[in-house]
Image (tube, rainbow, N blue to C red; front, side, top):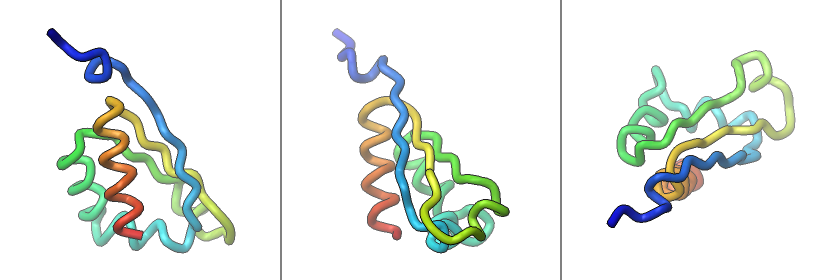
Length: 79
């Protein structure tokens, strides 16, 4: 029997200070690519121009419930 949570697609919006985005993404996107490969979630950051503005920036995470929660944990640990 397939669990319902493996079929549902969800999205999560994380507010993270924009000055941390480049560090979280990593050189050439290496950090974020590793998190996406490990969790199976899709992670989208705002464009570079909006990262330079002070304050918080929204990071969008989507996928299954399990993959989104795992990606969220990995993002929080890396920031």
